[in-house]
Length: 114
Image 1: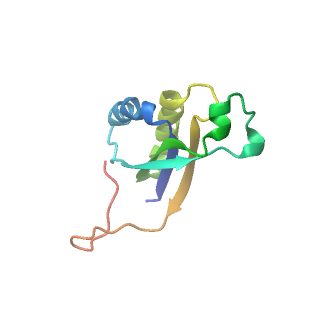
Image 2: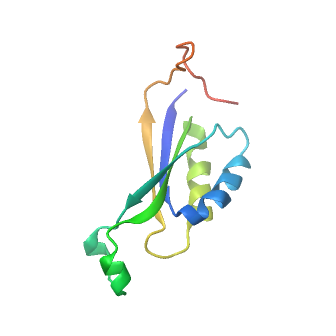
């Protein structure tokens, strides 16, 4: 069975809402979250305030989900629906192929849930 990693950079204010929406997905495998800082490509941004021009980085949250290939579209849609405000800075979602996964505890391959 093919495994994927779904990663998303989202606004920290959307994390609680996203967590609840992901938990509602049947057989959801789990999520790992990191605090992150970043900025949008300068050419893509029209500076509107002095604060925005002086702020080098903004706080974001990086979300990582390892799942079977069949769950990718549902997870991606959940991130879009839950995290979109319709403004610059909402974040990104991308998907990466995963070769294999093993538990550290017993070195056994991890099989998808469900």
